[in-house]
Amino acid sequence: QLQLVESGGGLVQPGGSLRLSCAASGRTFSTFSSYVMGWFRQAPGKEREFVAAISWRGDSTVYADSVKGRFTISRDNAKNTAYLHMNSLTPEDTAVYYCAEGPSYSSRVMSYDYWGQGAQVTVSS
Image 1 (cartoon, rainbow, N blue to C red):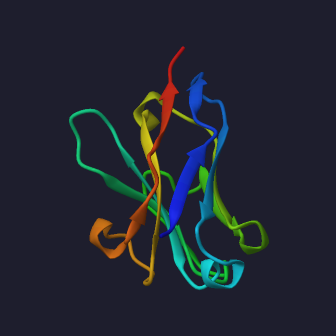
Image 2: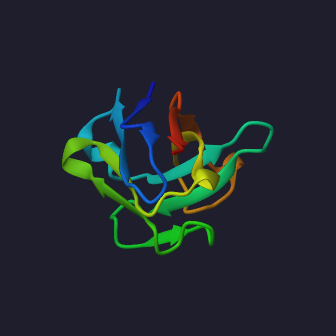
């Protein structure tokens, strides 16, 4: 059974930066690198929405329009870890951020099989 654990969330001022990490365990290194990693977020009272995804080799990425140019998704298959670098944060970015793993490159929630517990990101002065 795969486990995903997010870390790096917290409180940051508008215009600031954070880096979220998503560590995978319960699988061998070789199988982690075979799957797509995605980041999603959910604000209070709203549905979970797609943020970014990265292909299994890390050579292809896709972003939601709302974060394009500000967020960067990456992965280190040697460390079984995916990252979300967030810059120029605004209060509208406040949400619980989830990492997820799935077999296909997609922005759809239902395309991902495994999910982390979430990390709170709060952008406020």
